[in-house]
Image (cartoon, rainbow, N blue to C red; front, side, top):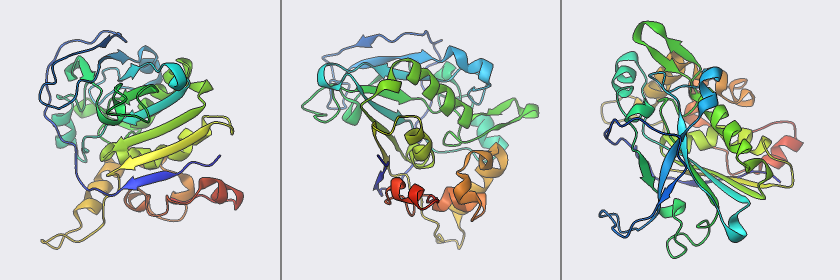
Length: 288
């Protein structure tokens, strides 16, 4: 089957300050709570799993630490279905912003929360999340600053731009955890994670047999190329910086980069995503 991306065009960034600096263990424990910490939800707390095989692949966060994800196992009718959510949180497009970022949870697993509470589409509560509450639900942490697309480094600043490798290492690890036999698989993300869901949607589809139902959901993943009140095209400049600094161009769909420059692919890659990729493959092309 083809894969589609459903867009919720809500512009915004997930910034968030860094919290905590406890070292991580490789746990997959689930913690439940009766206190809602103000979020209006009593979802499970799910511990981080660091991807131990990632280092050998050069798949590391901005500071060189291991990437990771939070996995809450499915049950019952959802035990063979998978929801993979790519964390968002803006970008870094120059050395200064990336150096700042690597000292936070957005650039280092050393600064990430010890557990994340799964709420909304990630919740294990059927009254909050009736469609996916019993699926295998995964939150892939975002620590590369380039929407999981970079492939480079800046030795002088001690920066690793390895987003594409992190994406691949995470998918390899999840496949080994049982995702390879999924009946249904949904790739999702919000903001910078939504952009990543768009850019990696075809790759995700290609990881599964043709009889696996695969779809992609990008929430607030489209960023408009418009002139701001100062007469500048801020998003164009931002994406240009990411592509140049992080070497993202090597990770972008070649079917798109063969028709437009790499910055435009990052900027415009979501314009045609409503089309069923099955039809585009039949015609010998894919939409950027």
